[in-house]
Length: 230
Image (cartoon, rainbow, N blue to C red; front, side, top):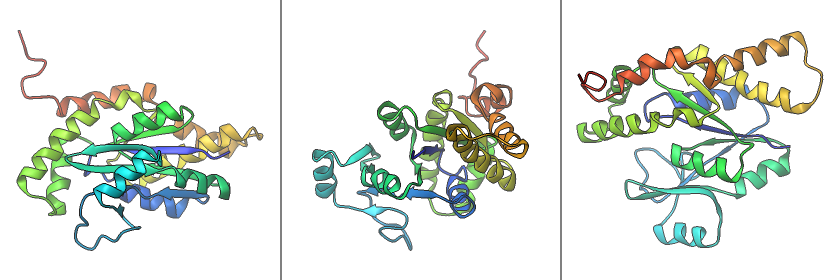
């Protein structure tokens, strides 16, 4: 059985770093590289960061039902091709998807057994700092990304697991535990004491177990004055 893991996060949350580390540390994972109609940036290469496609080619793929999910984001298409799931199944490996909240919703509708993980920054100030330190975007783009992040974060309750990425090494280990715990629980095999510890670490990231920690993070993204009405 191929497990499908969905990872979503606001831009600047450190998702790419976590995904790269987890692909290195967890065997048996296939990573789905998304298709997009946006232009490559910097040193990006087709087939590595994205498969860069013309709008006409992307729309042909939509018409032929070649996507698990797709969306128009700021005037560009992004999508996950079904072939990646078929290839993972043929290899007997699990599939890791790095997609936004729109795509995650589409995947969960089609494949409810998919496991969804939402990565949060520690707070809005830290997210803004990370976006500025990347030095990739104009002020207008940074503000747009922050506004988008606030909207995306409102969807946190739709995810199975929530991971606050404040300490990288700890976040990597928690993400690794989630993936391994799902495999263990679905395998039907006896679970050892060490494996129970892995499952316990994963359970600490379950939505119902992080509500208290989430409140100040969510509050930091609330519009100024929200909650102060008399």
